[in-house]
Length: 151
Image (cartoon, rainbow, N blue to C red; front, side, top):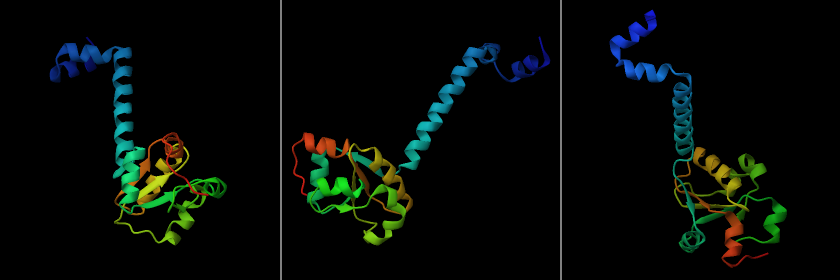
């Protein structure tokens, strides 16, 4: 038995050491650990962010949430949720301070499918907004639910 195996068996049961010394098992364990760390990082980076259904978003809007549409200006002009403010994602860092949003009040982020709004949520949380929400599936779900848009 090699010296490293002898050293390891002093501290661990041989079956455990043998399990990890097989290449495929070690690769699987490393892959699982990387996946777990990735999920942990994603959950921590989007802390305080929730994804809302159209019905939950409607309730939040009715409760006077700050609604921010992160689509580009042309899409916003083509149709948006009443009372929403336009903040194109491409200009989010420059224009976010100009909107004068209250950091302690709920913010609902809207985009076409929910992907860009999730990216915007990370920016909002980095800027100390405490109640950030994303419309799940974005305006696609809003239209599918036949909820009103204004032009």
